[in-house]
Length: 166
Image 1 (cartoon, rainbow, N blue to C red):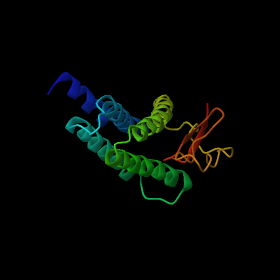
Image 2: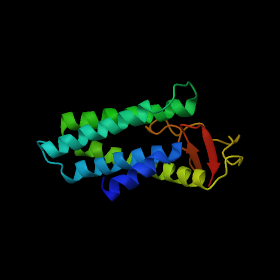
Image 3: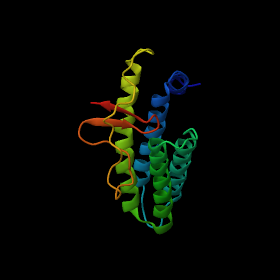
């Protein structure tokens, strides 16, 4: 096993749940960016493979959420479903702008989960920092596919349903 694979395996096996989600989102973001770099009309085999891999990662993100009816989790499920559908539409229509939109959403997800993973890593198990607050924003505008993201210096952790003041 190469040193890089051994490092990645150790990173995955020892990661917290927020870090695991962050790692998956990083893979999705890199794959989406790769598909943009190789985009041509008609799509090349390399671009088609990247889009297929991107959909597989999005399915993993979607299915890794535990069943539940809470609003933040449902909103996160909507985001991943939106991304999956947008990637599929982009591939079928050859519309590169749809992939650019996916990259923008994944960049927000990446930043959100990086902050959460970093905060989680620096907290003790008995720390009360990750308790819900009463000032959590309910959702962003309906026009946004990212319903549930916070604005104005707050970070929403959708799958956990928690808000952290930045």
